[in-house]
Amino acid sequence: MDLKKINFNIYSRKGYKKLLIVPIILLAVAIFYTTQLTYGIDFSGGSRITVPLVTAVETHEFERKLNQEFDILDLSVKQTTGPNRMLSVEYVGQRDIVAAEEAFAAENYALAITNAQRVTGVLEVEGEGREAAREYINQAGEQFRRDIRDTISRETGVPEEEFSFSSVGAALGSRFLEQSRNAVIVALLLIAMLVFYFFKNIVTSLSVFQAAVFDMLIGIGAAGFFGIPITLGTIAALLMLIGYSIDSDIMVAERILKRKRGEPHERAFDAMKTGLTMTGTSLGAISVLFVVSYFTNIQILLSISIILIIGLIGDIFATWFTNVPLILWNIERGESK
Image (tube, rainbow, N blue to C red):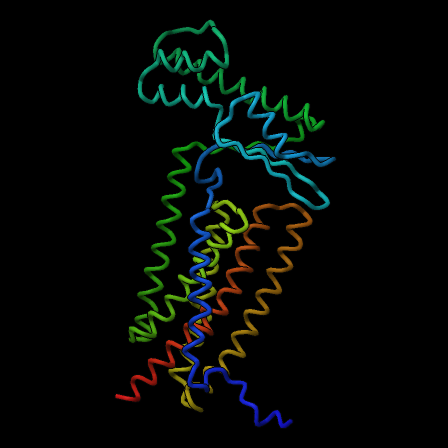
């Protein structure tokens, strides 16, 4: 067989527009999984206790015991695998304390004290009204934190000194979420303006812009599929995906539209070879990050690496099955006029 006579260029065939079917299916799947997103305590507010484990625990039974003893809102108990096994306990708060804080915010101080007393019992506090309610809530929070740490230490056999604890208020979490959304929207708007300024063609600009949005949705869908909560770290991963997508898609569009050697479909195929090499190199580097974070149990890096790997794979379809066919179709349409 003479390999020289075989045409490997997928863009030289008349049916190259059918390539659009694959990314459309992937996009539909990604959008479905975006409905299953969860938010980490960075955005939802709450607390996290991380415990280094010597032996594995049964997470469902552990979660049931904690809920039975403390009546905790939105409790989630997860266990990482690997050489350094970790237990992560996340929650919004104890139900009575949350109710007391809500009553305090509504200036119903008597109800706030009543709810807090279910945790603390009757206390001798100075002052009355607002001051007393605030003191009761503070004492209830302190007691709950001591009790849950004691229980976790007893059940796992790990001293409290080895625990790590983090907490984000609900108001601060909401502010973080709003700012993160604004950052993504502003980034997309600035990119759209820059791309249109560079190419001055609406179809080309939209083809490049859609690839960035496609990559972001694939990354979000991956988070929903793998149960990765949206945190400040995952938002950073999504912004990295947008930046990578724009970089590669501008390179592709520039080669196809502004270089004159060869036919457009030949320039597209040459650009594909360069682009796939770039993507392969990036996937290799991020795969190393995935392996290292998996075996060292660095959860935030593990989440970022998963989103980036899935997003870069999605970028292959966004660029070579969507962006390039749209640009070639626009060139053909212009030549036919």
